[in-house]
Length: 319
Image 1 (cartoon, rainbow, N blue to C red):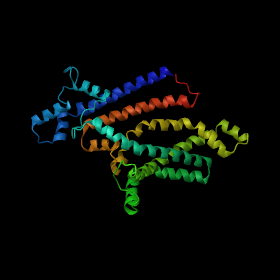
Image 2 (cartoon, one colour):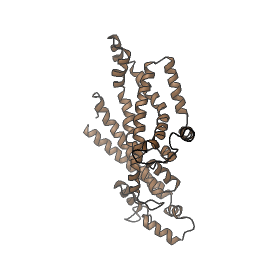
Image 3 (tube, rainbow, N blue to C red):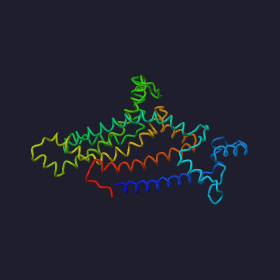
Image 4 (tube, one colour):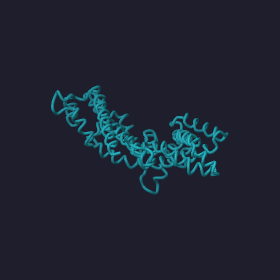
């Protein structure tokens, strides 16, 4: 198992290196540093101001290693690998400080949304699978497909208009980390996040559970007189955990990155909102930092999924 983990980590390093090279090509080779400076300062600034801005942000170096020993390619890899992300192109604020401030709001939003969505998805999928090939099953699949077909923007706008503006149950947007009021600001985005994801989750989990009900061990349990409810809870749910675990473990690293749309529309200052602001403000340094973090977390999630297989199912051997 150790050799397999080491090999997967090596593959992950290659993938992350490829992402960094692609980011360099997109943000430096395709996009000229002079264009980045003009987007940050304006088109009418003097050339000496542009050169000074480039020097302050480290953009005045040659692009490739064969042009100079101190080059942008080496500096780009060094900064990303050592997590020295530098300063924002928009306001010169340290990117690391901005990420530290954004992790908390992202986790406060994503963790309860993830836990509630997982619990709701598994429970509803078990319920629908229990009544498989009945009208309840057909109605459940129809509702799931309908929920998946509706855009998340409609959920957001509808919740803000009905729940916040008309009923005045929760604020339309904003965030306050104070323990006594933070729940009021998070209730509506968490509800929207759960509603937008439950359709796909229930359909996936239902497929897993229905497939497990046709296994030999289920027929054996029925032959021994075991009740259908006990079979679903103690046999089907347990043996269907591997595909469920795949989605769960892979989603855990991305809890730190937050949700782009939810944070942006509900005014939550998390990492998702930071990414959207970087796109809107042409903040290239922050944007490439967030893309690097997303790719790194994805690789970590893939490795964690493979390792978790062997921990849940002893029949799985990592070679």
